[in-house]
Length: 350
Ligand SMILES: NC(=O)c1ccc[n+]([C@@H]2O[C@H](COP(=O)([O-])OP(=O)(O)OC[C@H]3O[C@@H](n4cnc5c(N)ncnc54)[C@H](O)[C@@H]3O)[C@@H](O)[C@H]2O)c1
Image (cartoon, rainbow, N blue to C red; front, side, top):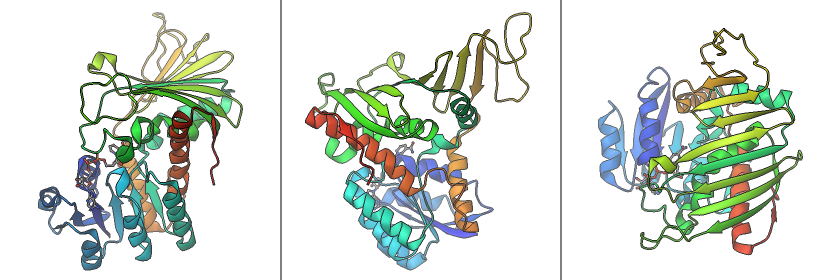
């Protein structure tokens, strides 16, 4: 049993909290901190022992948690992590880790020096779609990656300014950039165009409403990743990543489906031309299509894997520790730099 505390009881804090309420066999929920007292109090009311705080340092020193989830907005990172490292507390930090790369790299180095177990909020890496996707990558040479993520604007006050959110690529579409890295490989250079033209009715909105990034990967493939937050109707939403090879394509809709499209059916074909396999994950498909579907909430496995790693002291099953997550932040911040300079940016990965 480990004592767990949360810093930041807003949207994503609530998401993690719903998981923690089912982890009574491995954690005790002891503390909740938010600058807005009612948010922390609301979390505390859901537990037997949990106490609400507005100052995380007071919480850390009073209740001495053994695991902390950091669920604050992108600009709030830095001192919180330093205080956790000073107290030797393993922590899970929400993406995008930080907007300042110098601070994030310094945190990474201090985590390494202490040997602390960490994880980040890239729950898509824990989806059951990852295994067939990895298999596809192992068995095929990917040549081109076509990614799209079109949606709307999250209703949090800090989102509309790039200085406080990082902009859509860094704050939101980082999930797509991260899963491409995880499944395919590391980027070498990005070249991004962005436009602020299409959102005119929100005062102070100063981030790109649409961008397209061309990526050259170290292994050779090229990608075009377009991302927009201009949609006002669900019918305009789109989210998919298509991996193309010489003889087939695979379409990943993260946390939804993974579909392999090829000429020959890869599974038993019945008389109606549908393919069905009995492993549950594979549903059905038209001739030549193999479809895997998302099962459950990948975030449960993501959170539990981290907590179990802290309990056992073995972090090897964590799919997105801080140092790896930082590479996705570097990838996406390079896109911002390219927008700002109008030039291709080589990913340094210091
Ligand atoms: N992994 C995911 O899929 C996912 C989904 C949504 C959000 N997020 C990430 O989670 C982070 C938070 O997003 P959100 O939607 O929960 O935002 P939010 O605004 O709903 O919640 C953040 C909370 O943190 C609190 N806070 C800010 N500074 C604090 C401090 N110093 N001490 C204590 N509390 C503090 C705020 O008062 C607020 O209640 C962002 O970085 C976002 O990118 C991740």
